[in-house]
Length: 231
Ligand code: NI
Ligand code: MN
Image 1 (spheres, rainbow, N blue to C red):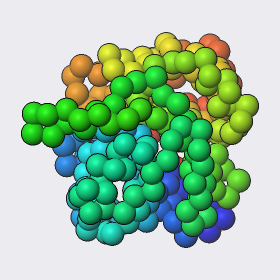
Image 2 (cartoon, rainbow, N blue to C red):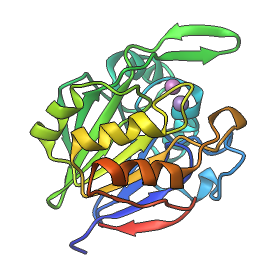
Image 3 (cartoon, protein in one colour):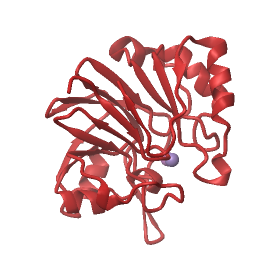
Image 4 (cartoon, protein in one colour):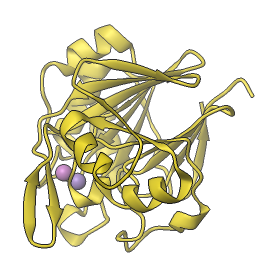
């Protein structure tokens, strides 16, 4: 196959399948009341984690243990996962790793990170996003983030065709600032994420789409949970 298949599993969890390699990003499945897939059905080669919060680290330990797959994440999180016997590729913001036919570049995100376990909070390093490139397609997964002006640099450096952006507000950008992020990123396609999973991040993605139309010619695609998009 010469195209890339993008699947949304709800919240910030996306799967990118090149035919040769499958990357699963932020696999928050068993704790997601709206999940349409079970973790047993997922079969990734790589799990990429943007930060330690439980709605992103999610089922990473279970999936990586069962599939014996590689987890790509920031150094501090990789040390934690390694202590659980998981194979990791630790990296940091600005760096790129190549795995199979995929390039993963870690980008900045304006957010916090921690590993929450049994009432304790461990340092999770920095929160990040990813640029994922394969077959001439560049996909930006912003992770959890506020808007920041270096999104213009991300646009210049990696020219994302697709931007996966949080719009839920409260913990991340809301619809209006995410629309301004689209203006800076200049993607062809935008997919909203990190909304509607819980009451306090309820948002109308159509309102986000209307905000984008005012500032950008990018196409907003509101994916359903479990739906696919060929790129
Ligand atoms: Ni978070
Ligand atoms: Mn989150």
